[in-house]
Length: 289
Ligand code: AMP
Image (cartoon, rainbow, N blue to C red; front, top):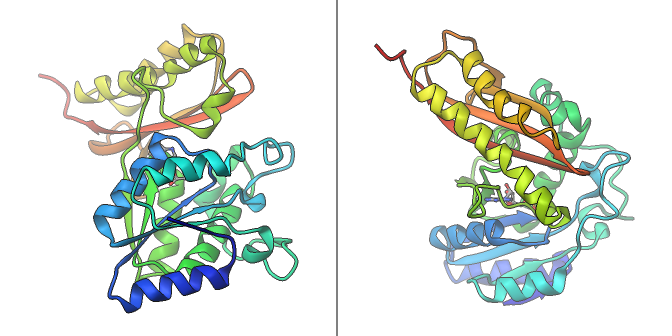
């Protein structure tokens, strides 16, 4: 495994792989890697012969007052973890490589549109424009055949799919399932900020999603399913619910009570100072007889 910091070094390695006929897989991350990220690497390896993982904390997707400065930066430990998987190149660029010539991102070059200002986008204005801008930059830098993203960030996947369909049709998008702790808590780089008690509290997030799923399986309309999830949060005052919704996965818009079929339950909540998101694919069935 090689660690490179510049486009020039990356280009050379990717060009060598391609000229040897290898299919290039790409996993973009912000580092502070956990098992969820590492499973993305495993999936990339299944899909490709040569795997590039990028580690870049993108200033453009953090809003004012968000945790850009204190976002965990653990390159050495990340490289060690990646050594244990089949990663070929870790690309850890400086801001100057990603945003030439001076590392200042300036204005986003990609726009997330209307859905980009709902849910996560409403809580984090400009986040998706910044995320899409760096994804486009990284896809241009790495030039992969396949890119792997996690379902954990469902709204991100929705936006990235649109970006890739429009601007990177040659790159295959693979979406990897969410990896969870045994408690059900979705793995996240931000979980390290939770105390053991807060980790326990945070399990309400996945429990609420399971309650939504249970109600949906029994044919309850979407608003009742959401209510079932709210009930769990009502019993856990230390977790501050930001939103719990059921959206149509094709549109990322809330479904109405007539909706049947596959939907996506999405949730964001704060535990202590930590903002956590999660989601679950659900099936809203016909009402039980
Ligand atoms: P991040 O470093 O948080 O930007 O995440 C990098 C990639 O890892 C994104 O595609 C995330 O959706 C994905 N990811 C983060 N957490 C998980 C998880 N628990 N399970 C699967 N994928 C994840």
